Image 1 (cartoon, rainbow, N blue to C red):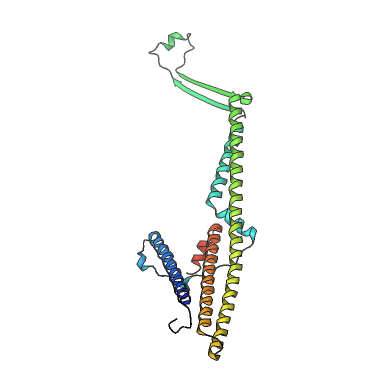
Image 2: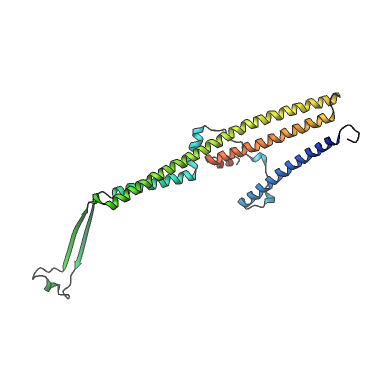
Length: 266
């Protein structure tokens, strides 16, 4: 600009590009600091002692089939397990209420040692008084026509049906969420491939411009623009890779594979 080759607008554009890079760096550092502080509270370790070692991160497992993922998600979901146990409890309760219609038989026995100071021997006829007495009894109930028990059984059936439907709804919800996560992973894999190819194209273009600059057929401005474009594509690739890894971690958390993946690095 001082030599009169470029206009002040180009200088402003260069400053804008530099400011954007500084913004991206600040955003990345801020996110890292927040995550480091969160990890510090979870582990009890000072945040200053937490350092990321990229080589210690295990490779992400291959994506499983849809049915396997949903099955693993349902079996490892606390919500689904709780709903299924509740449904089973309500079923057993309803089954017990219906069994209350069955006839019941109660057997009772009582033994008594009677004394004479209370004139028991005078109250009973002569020679019928016995100091040792035993009483046996049997009570048989037939609650077939109990309206109260019928109402309780119907209410238990309704609660069992409601609990079963809630368990099915919980399984369906987990299955749908798992499918969404799986599709998100696949979409991010495709997006990463696109970002990778765009970065490779921009890098090849940068190499071509550098060759032209060396040959004197291109200017420093052309080289700077190519470098800026390559840097943007590289940052886009890093962002896409991060989003892909976050989606993969979310999917593994849903299917119960996260702990196995973490232990894979040990």
